[in-house]
Image (cartoon, rainbow, N blue to C red; front, side):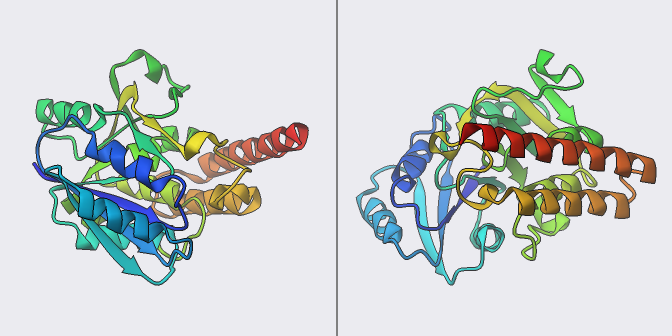
Length: 264
């Protein structure tokens, strides 16, 4: 099966080559299409991509798609539309994959043809609730996703037909668009997660409060609440559960504020 990997690119000259090389170095032998969507960068990082395309001697296809800046959701959606693979994967431009990442996921898909979505752990972090960490592969439902936004976008493989059916990323959202997508996908299929850490994210940065979109924790919290409201609107949770998860998300937001304040 052919896999298309979408990498949104915005001012990532310091990390993009390591990101691309982590895909080129995958042990998975079937065709891989790498689509880098340049979302209006102005630091010259697209030149680095053009150079690696010229020098590419692997059997991987690398494509650069340029567009005006529209945000990470529009860049990912553009990549999906441009892709030709049966499966799609996402990789942020400061994240890297371990070499066996795709091979291990595709092995699980071949074992279980009902899988349309499969993620992995990242940064040696395991899902902490509901005894999931005891299983080699596990599933997540809506309430388990709301308990912890998991799995991370850069770990995911998704059947392209399913992704198109779900409706792609909501480009009106600037924060927590990943969580919103996970909850919408859960309306259509079971989310599987391979309980192995096969991705390193953020080039060593904390996942909140340091840089990028996650630096604005207030907007992240508002985005998470918006995703929570979407789950209630779709009937995935009831009113009592909504308020319970609102308190849970608020508590996590306050905890992050404290962590950032103490670390300064």
